[in-house]
Image (cartoon, rainbow, N blue to C red; front, side, top):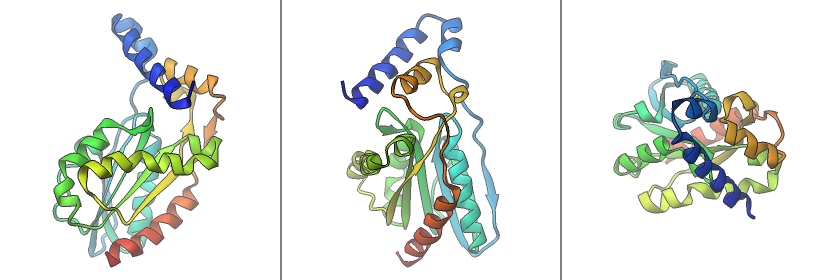
Length: 211
């Protein structure tokens, strides 16, 4: 059985068990992490950082990206995808998401699709956060390709697509997700490399400014 097939079965199991009622749902589903919106920096360039997350992992990456952009002289709005609104009025946009079953979170995908017209006309960069890259660095290309269907459907041409390692913090995941990760023997811990995230942001900011 392939890893993706195994994850798909696990995702189906979550939904099936949840049908049983409120008590079962509470036992199966981990509470969603609070998602924050904030602004930092006071530079002339206006940047929007949009993120999709369930566990809260990707929010931390979005914040580090925003801090780096602000330090470089930008005004940065950080918004969860469900609350991001239109990208109109921004000079550059960076969008990222965690993944489940080989795809971005629905809120992030929906936001990109809804704003594809505007995003195609402006400099955009993407990033994907996945635990796989921490357990198996050779999977980076596979994780990067998770955005290919979204880009093909929308026609967006990002200046770059990054892949960052995430975390496996068991308390942040549902019972089924924890079980899947345990069977996969996924390493436990926070594998986000904030120095690498900042370095990528510095480099991609140059590409965005030149686009």
